Length: 154
Image 1 (cartoon, rainbow, N blue to C red):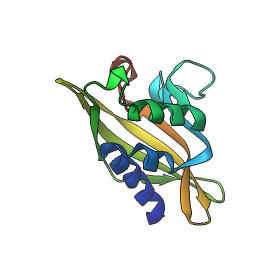
Image 2 (tube, rainbow, N blue to C red):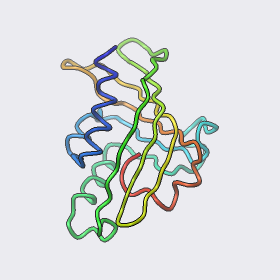
Image 3 (cartoon, rainbow, N blue to C red):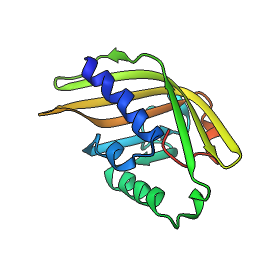
């Protein structure tokens, strides 16, 4: 289980370092990155609007935009810092690990800064050389605060 927990920590470190291609490589080809608009109260990504609900293709498009030097939203560039608590394993099916990780996320761009808190829920699948992220759910403590401000990945 430690290698699964290490993957969650590594994911945050890659985002903090703006290593978006390496970050995306942690995701399974059949993945879902989901930030519910209602936070933990939302049970299904398709039953209500979301802050983000992206498959692998949409994540790749976001990474491409963030790396593009002409991306208007990244002048000046956004930078982030993740502060994670210890991941707590939850029940998962065979070949899967499910982890819940409380976090604090700070994103700075120019002179503005956003501080968010919440809990990640990673569903990881085992592959031949380790783990891949099949689903990442981000339950924000105050989801309405995040809408206008987030440029990177929570």
